Image 1: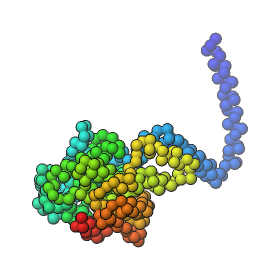
Image 2 (image 1 turned 90 degrees about the vertical axis):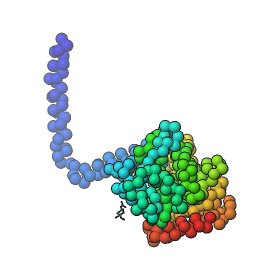
Image 3 (image 1 turned 180 degrees about the vertical axis):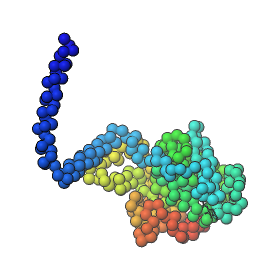
Image 4 (image 1 turned 30 degrees about the horizontal axis):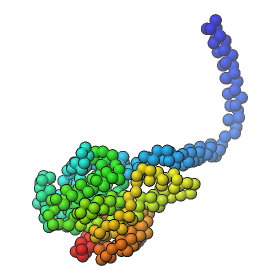
Length: 359
Ligand SMILES: *[C@@H]1O[C@H](CO)[C@@H](O)[C@H](O)[C@H]1NC(C)=O
């Protein structure tokens, strides 16, 4: 009985199915032109992008931890095909090593010695590099911005410039970045940086040790400097390249943030998510408290973090302490240094030495 029923339906089913295509086929042949197909694709794309545009803030609101991923971008392990254990492919007289900044957290670091010691450094192991920190050359701890590893080109180029100018450079990949273990958090990145500073300071004798932050790294540099000051060992100098006032204002001015500026409730959806994810990076508040000499570098054509923020930080610093320790260098737009090409300034070494010699 049951078997017969389906067969009866099959018999009647195909008749209905074949009927409908026959009716619609002539319509399809005559009507659609290339233009209307193009338009309907455009419409479809519009609907897809519109849906993403509207849903994205809601997803961020529901899962504020995603905001952290957007801010850190540590999952972007670029550039590809670089062996971080062999920095020699990108940088001369450089050694790769790892430190345990906290129980269970291992961070990757490149140490480049001053170019003047390049010949000596050939074939030497990490112990030689470590003891080289006690020569008479100042040390810069480089705290990079979000996304990518210590092998990103503009970071490598800056290391070359600083090494040629006579500095040791230690370039850190914070927890969660590159081959470092763990997951990023504002507190964790600060801990890694404080640890590296103290590790260097214990080996550098009287040489000045400077914290250099770029972009997102500026907030980590001032967080670390504040922590060191609270511990009674203030950083010898703090250098901020393309800094923001705080991460909330940076987010609101970021090109990505601007896409959503017209979105109703931008603050509710995005900026609150930063606060709920414990993202503060308060350069403005830190600088009010800091007593370390401060150098700010900012290009006026910076399209990621506007130079008005660097100027604002400079104003805060000058108003809160002895102004001689504070210096601001602005690069006019025609130089084209934007957000990450200040290393191209041929006078950068001279600027740094001028700043350090004055303190
Ligand atoms: C290393 O130094 C040599 C000699 O100065 C130079 O030719 C070479 O390009 C440098 N390598 C890198 C990776 O910078």
